[in-house]
Length: 241
Image: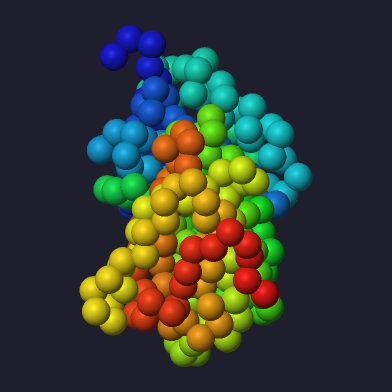
C-alpha cells in the first residue's frame, strides 16, 4: 500500500514478525539496553503487538533515530529491522531482537496502589487494585468534560479475608455518583439519587475482591458493582474514617 513501509523482525529462535509503519503506535526505551516497539495487531485498534529490541548501552538516541528512518522508509519500502539469523540490523548498535508478542485482544493496564491516590485522565481504561495499609481515598478526576473516562477498581486484601482498612472512592467536589451496587444478601441494590453521594465507601469489614466499574457520563460518575453484604459498602456525602 502506498505511503507505508513494512518492517521485518527475525529472532535467533526463528520467530519472525512483519507489520506496516501505518500500524506503528510508538516506542519506549524500557531499560538501559532495550526498546519496545508497539503496533496495532491483526484486530486493528483493539489489539496490540510488541517487539523488543536489544541495543548497546548508551546508544538509545542513535537507535531511536535509526528506527525513525526505518519507519519513514528512508532505506527501502521493506526494511529488515533486526535479523538475528544473519546478524543484520537497521543500526549497528542494535545487538539482537528480543521477545515478539502478538496479542489478539485488548489489554488493560493494571495500576496497583496501597494508599491515597488521585486518578487522572491518563488513568482512563485502567484496572486499579488497592490493598490499603490504612484508611485510603481514591480521588476520581472530573466527570464534567470527561465523558467516556472509565476505570475498574478492585479492593483486595493479600490474605483473601476482609479488607481490614476503609477505602473511600470520591468524586470531584460538586459532582456525584449514579448507578447501583448489587448485594448478595437478598439481591438488593444500593441506588444513589445522582444529586448527592460524593463518596462510595468500602468498609474495613468488607470481603476482599469487591470490584466497581466506573465511567463518566459527562456530568456524573456512574458506578456498578457487587458486594456480599449491604453493609460492605455504602454511598455517602462524606468520606468514612
